[in-house]
Length: 148
Ligand code: DQA
Image (cartoon, rainbow, N blue to C red; front, top):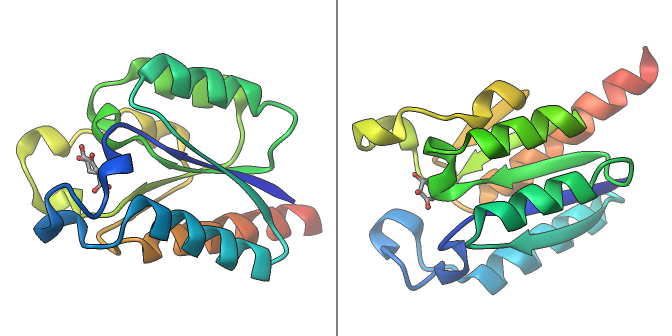
C-alpha cells in the first residue's frame, strides 16, 4: 500500500511560522513522524510539499494509478483552489483533508474549503498527530473496501 502525503504553501516553514498556531515541530519533524508511523502500519509514503498550486495539481495527477490514498494539507489553497478540487475529483483517489490548526475556530475566510467536497474525511486541530490520524482513516477505509 502506498500513500501520498501532500503539503501546500508555507508548510515548509513549520516550526518557524506562527508557532502559537502551528507549533514548534519543524517540517522535517513532521516528515519523520509520518514516515515512521506509516512504516509501522506497513504503508509506504511519498511526502511532497510545494508553494505552487500547479505543482500540487501535477503531483495529484501523477498519483493516478500509483497511489492508494492521499493525505492532503492544501494550506491556504484549501480556501481558494478549484483546480485542486478538480484534480482530486479527476483521479478519484481516497483523500483525507488535514489541517494542523482548528480552521473552524479561525477567520471567516478559513471556513470555506474547496477541496473538502473531494475528501471523505477532514482532520483539524490535532497538530502533526492529525497526519497520523489521516493515515489511520485511509487504512480503515481501504480495508473496509477490500472486504466488500
Ligand atoms: C492550515 C490552515 C490554513 O488556513 C492555512 O492557510 C495554512 C495551514 C493548517 O494546517 O492549519 O497554511 O492548512
